[in-house]
Length: 459
Image (cartoon, rainbow, N blue to C red; front, side, top):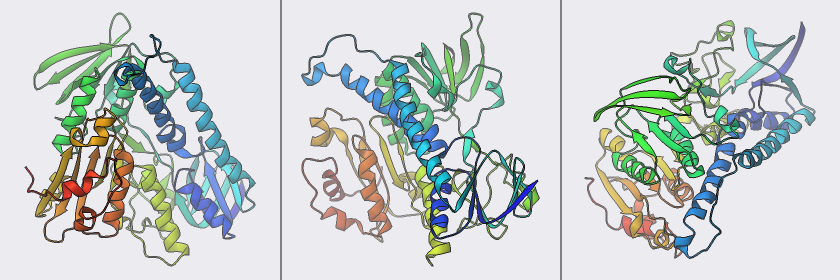
């Protein structure tokens, strides 16, 4: 057994582990870096990057379909070439992953180990024949799709395996009506597949305010997606003709949906089950997440859990912020905490949803005296000029402090505009500053001051 000591061990090349490795190595620390399979983690290989290339292709297909209405004459018969879509995605993700791997291999202070890591003792990690020891260990092992028992005996797809398809599904059935299910549902509907989405909650993206969920439901339905909500009983099996049949019991009755492909998109589980955490004094929580304090340190001093495996965020930007918190505190004398982070995320349907802070129902539940500003996208000139009028803009204000509690921008440009709201919230900016700002015309964001001039109590 080959035993080696390092200043730090980093397990996983996701969006927290990779920059931390380069940060520490650049400071002269000797770093052992372990990656089991994909350099760059899920974001680059099976998450953000590949799915957004598909979103872009789907958008192009949608643009072709509405070209005539915009006064653009195109030859008839636009169709998707899924093999070429996949080839473009593969080239982009491979290039990014190679760049990360090359940088890690070439850095003189980084020793790269490929294989599955598991703890073999207190602050001792085993990788194949190697035993690595370090005073500081950073766990960044990410998460994988969760597949309930009811679907495991079927031929099913996950967000990872669906990206390997080279032929278009005839009818794609999706279990789960949140980020993954809705994004892939719209992608493949625009590609030309029939799509049915089944969600057990009473509305899709049920953690959102109902009016936001209903607006997303409406434009997806208008694109031809069949949506079943309140599906409290779902049973699936193979039909005699080889297709997949899903029996759905909803509030409005029972039905059976039969399709060619099944995508299971009901959440993710952390990749902590192979780490042998007990060997170093750690235990995963009930759902497999490693518990951390507000500084992202575990119950064992010197061992940190970053990214999806700590249950404190499930996005690339929260993973990278985990790196910023740990790096700032350990090396820059800062006092950054995960509890200071303003929740923010985007749903990349088209139009997209940008969310920051609390929803209206969350703010009311916490006892805030809430004022609301909102405007439908159909009243925004820039959206009308683009003929993209689905959605709405909404800001939630605390009446006493005049601080912004949260916001939702569902509509064209919403994924970019929300950053301005997050910045204002991070700065503690009272809403009158935004209300009195001068915003360029013609833009979608120029309506934010106008709607803040008409605050009202929420419905």
